[in-house]
Length: 158
Image 1 (cartoon, one colour):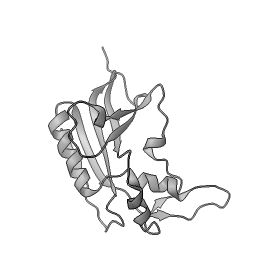
Image 2 (tube, helix red, strand yellow):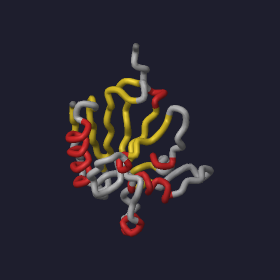
Image 3 (cartoon, one colour):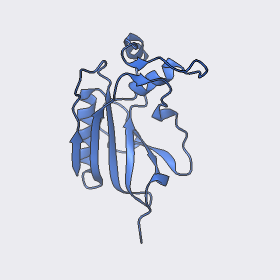
């Protein structure tokens, strides 16, 4: 399994700045399925204490209605450096033989308005969520979910 952790090249305006994705070798009849991990729950006090002026770019076309709280949720779904390290260790220990790679990188700030939080994407025929915290023997102290879209990946040839 390849693990790539890309360091931040500039100071981050918030500790909650890390994105994690992983590639599962074989999942639901597809090969090399990319899964984007996120925190589905957050502390509203943490969100309310953040200085969003450096985190979100709020300039937008005046005819487009966007809401800062929706983009703020994208940030709240991200991981802190400590959480990032815990998730990577958990995946290494629990899923080492099933994963092709884990990629971790900082988000690019300021984020543009209008981004969609992963938790708000509806599940469908090919899109869904892995609810790691509902899998037996889950050991992380916070919930982690993973979004996937099977339509983006080739079927396993039989």
